[in-house]
Length: 123
Image (cartoon, rainbow, N blue to C red; front, side):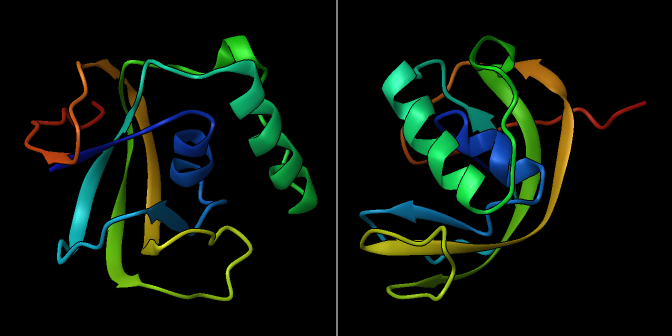
């Protein structure tokens, strides 16, 4: 399964910085999923994420260096919560994340919600 996440949030997740993914819906999905970086990303969204990342001591890649429109890594969903002490939590629900791993970029059209994919392992 995969989940589309807008950049730079997808980069923050697969590089082990962001430990929760915020959604306005809950999930029972558990286990490793592919992280799909959505094509869309505005400069305003990037700036908001950059400010939060800097508060956590994380420097983002440049706006134009973030890959979009494909699989960028994997992460394990271990829980879904409606409150959490993580500085990355804001919203109705948070998917608690562990064991993030970046992968070489694989172009793939995204979809809403969880969707099935086949991810190639690095050689």
